[in-house]
Amino acid sequence: AQKVTQAQTEISVVEKEDVTLDCVYETRDTTYYLFWYKQPPSGELVFLIRRNSFDEQNEISGRYSWNFQKSTSSFNFTITASQVVDSAVYFCALSEAGQGAQKLVFGQGTRLTINP
Amino acid sequence: DTGVSQDPRHKITKRGQNVTFRCDPISEHNRLYWYRQTLGQGPEFLTYFQNEAQLEKSRLLSDRFSAERPKGSFSTLEIQRTEQGDSAMYLCASSLVSGGRDTQYFGPGTRLTVL
Image 1 (cartoon, rainbow over the protein chains, first blue to last red):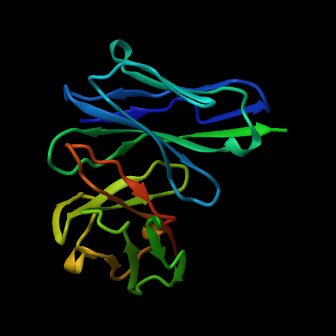
Image 2 (cartoon, one colour):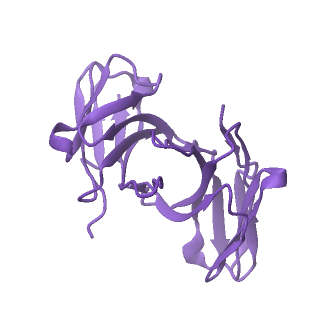
Image 3 (spheres, rainbow over the protein chains, first blue to last red):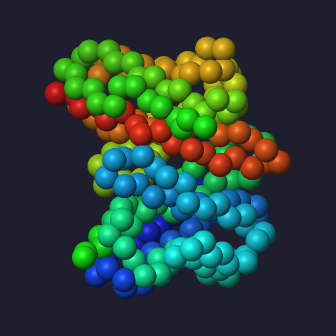
């Protein structure tokens, strides 16, 4: 069975600090996908990134970066120079690959609060 | 591109009543997913459609729940004889499968409160 664990329930930092959100996953599949979504107070889940299991290259997009380590089954997310607008709940998710439903298995989320 | 839309955004109902939610996916997206999210939890998969065919349902989807996607466009999720445990956010997502990739884009959700 697939499982995603986000051990940090809540994180609070002061604006401009760097912050890392942890994500650990479990799967028996050899090919799978990993995702991060952001859920602001409005409730809509906003897609941030998708990563294939066979591509361990880290990725950077502006102030966001992702560290994928297959050896530790982790897919951590770092926000550099955080801003108040980054405040939201962040979800890590996992899906199997293949032609069937690629239903997402989500972690419990990390509530990030950026204080001015 | 307009995103995924859901209607209504909020629904308050009394226990035992039937409710129906609508989801309009991003145009030309061939897959449509329904998830349920309870307070403080991540979303949980309910069911999915490939075009108009409902191909998978979660054990979470009891007999009181039914979903349709006529003509492979919008989808409806109906809950009959609502119970207080049905109170949750119901999220719809759509995707266009390309090269085996399936990135789901979510709507704003319908928040259901059963009194």
